[in-house]
Image (cartoon, rainbow, N blue to C red; front, side, top):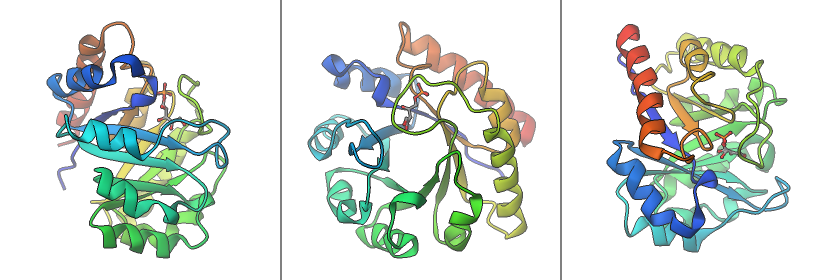
Length: 227
Ligand SMILES: O=C(CO)[C@@H](O)[C@H](O)COP(=O)(O)O
């Protein structure tokens, strides 16, 4: 099966004073996805931004909006995020009262559904919904902040998850990896089986275009080899 590979720049590391302009720059640099981190100050210690920001950037962008909800009881908000422009809504297994019900609710809004696991959450937390989602997100840092260091054990978790999906005939389910991805770590997550690569500080640095190009080149050379 030929797999889709995407770089999903995380706007948590963007300059919020020029957010629209920075999103246009990743779009012009031929990214197709945008990773949007919603933090509630409860599930994670930090607070980022909410619906008004998503609604506002939606007006200027045709990127695929990949909304990562680091929010307790996220089922309360999935309808609103979809109506503000989310294309994919990812919720944490640890944050949901009923994960399968939340996934169902996301699909009822018309959005794609993802489920995320923290670095210390066993993959068994998402086994029951694997056949119901479009994407599984392996957090490769503890969620809450950009700019952290990649947790090396994440590589084996990605490999195990890809094997589990393959064994169940679920090759089409995306594996997303998020946290500490940069030029030094991207090769190993691709080789382990991740196909949607989130990068925040490695993209929104001093030269967005060059950063995107370098990461895209690594993704494209890996995907050509994998064909
Ligand atoms: O969800 C999160 C952090 O909780 C991420 O999406 C970060 O925004 C990734 O940042 P980098 O590690 O790539 O700088």
